Image (cartoon, rainbow, N blue to C red):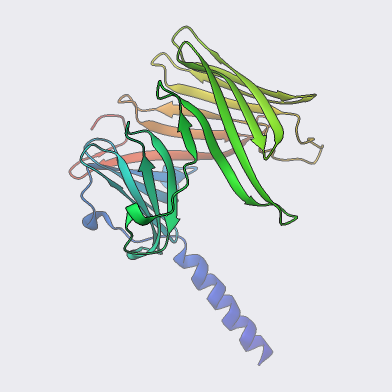
Length: 282
């Protein structure tokens, strides 16, 4: 009897794992221009991890993966209005994120709800993103909630500008300063470095670009958390390299740990409604 129970439990686990190796094709339900297929490691292995659907204006309209589906809704001016977090693959039920804008069409925050019908004018909405008279982002709420002690906290970022570019960033947790950062740019006005410091603690992000000014490599280094000999991966010390098709669409993301060892690779294919293309040509 005991062995029978173990066998049944094993079958349930195997069945569950098998269900997670694939997800339904909802292409016929969506009016899309092209879709992006994300594979893990090798396309030849057909280890499909997710699909993103795009409109004729290259707007992301749906995302689907293992046990999740997100649907995005825009207005006639391509302004994002709502995002549905569908329950499993059913978008008739689930969670919703409603986006709010000021009279200059600046995003000022969002509101989460599970209600299927919502009057946006009646929502007790709290603004979390702020701008100056030049419509430049100057303050935003990054995170809020209760810490491990059960105490409420808010993490904010504030920005200062010079010549219409972010020059300085200050991150705070309640009244405590976490980071003070400075931004650096190349002659093409592309961001190449963010250096965050507080006392002896630092976090440095660097950005490299290809000849077409697309991001080629992103690196982050920090001494905030000590790296031990047995550490195989540090979230604050790693790098990502990017490769593109001829038409500019992302082809590969290759992620490395602090030792320069490859951790994972995502490879992307693209399919239009009529033609498949993975060489950069539609």
